Image (cartoon, rainbow, N blue to C red; front, side, top):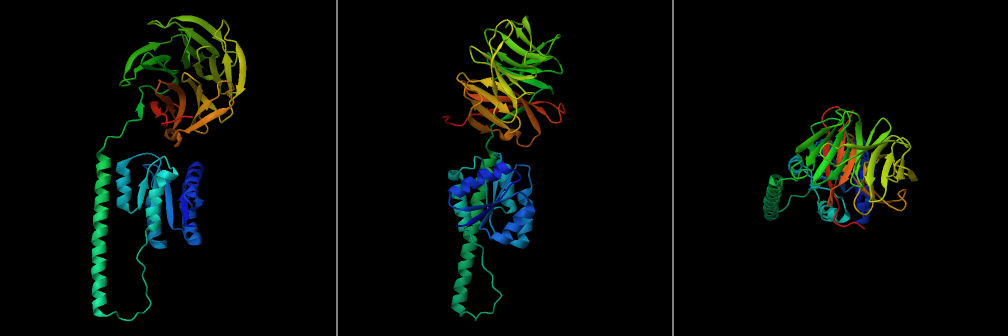
Length: 389
């Protein structure tokens, strides 16, 4: 059973790749840093090393430099956390055997690993040997020249293919917003509505090009999470309030309710109930949109810490800010999570999600830069996988 070393700083990445490698019939050895990788090379004699890194990371470059001394013929495959063809070309030029993009499924890794495991460097020997007959030596030299030419053409073809990939336009998945303290996100009328608590304003962005088409100031409230429901806009406002607005040009106030379970950071309306999430206690609350927004049931969140809520027309979704995941909840019992989708955009820890919305086809999140307010906020789009059970 071939041994494959998996080098990744994040435990989650190591586990994901180990499962895929195991399903392909190989034994995975997990390490978290460069020193551990070199120790594994000496102790385990692996056939291959897989390095996980971001497009801006340099782990693979450092490993290649170390392997020049330790194991110059050992193939290195880079598992990128994001698709970036230009960086893949740079890594191939630096000397990695291949570059794979997410998702790191057994099917996606199979061809690359099979090819890498078949790779063998030229064996060198310092032991004295009998001089080969002149004819045999000539044949050997010719064979080596032919092999070198073939390998050169193969490398050239691969580089040209990667260069063509680099020229293809990469779909944009994130956009800077012209404010630094977003607090909530919702979709309405072909627009993304985003609040900014610092400026006490609501910004309406066109879904077509994300430009700001309207800004509305809230002089009496500090807006955060928001949701549309019952022909009204509901806004969680500091301190300890939820405000109901008319859907007119000025968003006139229809009602002002004390928040009975404060620190509401997310809201969603399912057509009957207004759902809110409470960061302080880590709970989900089901409310009746009556004169006091009565809480009829409360559920444990069942994960890390909620940051925002959304309703997709069928069930409730949330963003878990601790595990950086998009969670689908059972609407009958939201403490039960039925699906977890990782959000690689938040893996670096540079951004903290504060809002979530569904536009009928894909999810959107809005985030605040860490440390809080250090620069403009950011809007991310998250297409769903092809099939959802």
